[in-house]
Length: 146
Image (tube, rainbow, N blue to C red; front, side):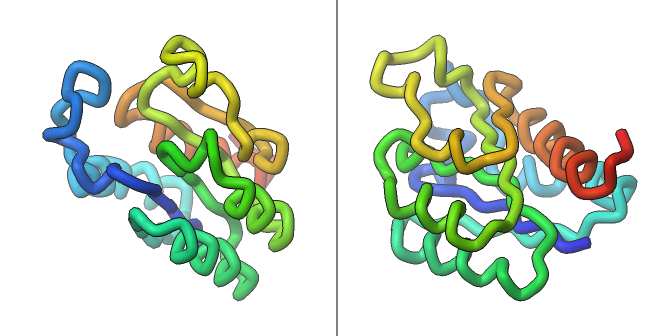
């Protein structure tokens, strides 16, 4: 089963961006560390990152090709992008929203996720492990098995 792991703005800077909040692990290292989890869950993952809202919308639209689900860290667009929220709602592909930091324990403007009402669930605050948990959550949703 194919899963899109979609990453928004500034996540290409993981490893050097605010390590006190996001740690020292790069996005490539997170992708590599979740490969075994994906294999164990019989998932084929496609990892994409963009700093451009329209490109992220296009990638969400492309999941109508039979992609089973999306694990998405929309970064700052989580709190601002009606376009991403509407794209998720429009395509009907199940989405698990993930964040490395606990957005509910940070600045007040980060407490609201525009994506959450269109997602099947949200995982926050577990650092790089948030992605592996997101893969497990989407697999559980799609197969009904833990």
